[in-house]
Length: 295
Image (cartoon, rainbow, N blue to C red):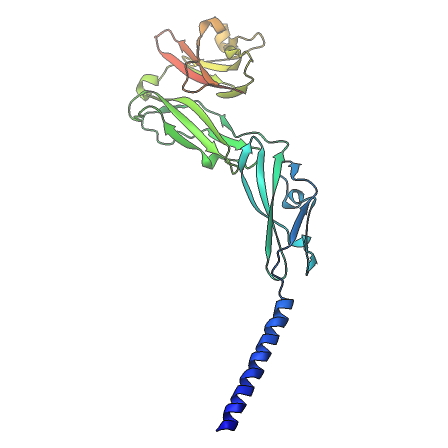
């Protein structure tokens, strides 16, 4: 019995020693320290279409055990803008023991422009129209087309089956968290009342201008349709009827024949509009709006 006990004790000591030796060896083989990331600059200037390779330029990573692990560098996140065109990037590096190191770098986009809206038709719709985003698009230099991210907020209570003018705000946000807002007047009209009324066509329905830039609203009138006669922009700056109408003594339309009202009492600074109105001989009035955004 004593021999068995002695043998058990010896076996335990041997196993414990082997296990301890194994643990000691393992502690020398497994690296618990993360790589070290070094940058030649904490800020980098790039264009909006910069690749990850360009964003990582000048960054290296090294590990005490593995040596150079620069190839493991990755862009983990690009944060929201902290200033116009400026955001923080987080990069990570790995070693063979899956230790992870991270560091941050400021990214400055040299060609960044905030999102802008474009409008190729007036914001005037027959009563009952549900898709009021038709003709409205948005884009920027970072993400490109942002049209599918446009949202609408109603400032006024909008009744799509009641003709009238309603204040709304269109908004769009890009991947950097930069939001552009466009406060506008949205109009629903009665199709019966609008039938036969003059139609005014503009070359643009939304323009961006410098804050101190004067806008000649008449310059944006492209054509007018009255009583089946189309008046188009002539070389003199007036709207001339077609040749057949001229033969019948129809005269052109000048800026004085159209009422153009500038509205600066808007729901947000930096945005105003021109309201164009023209009335035919039967007292039917056609109208359209030009939205002006100042920068």
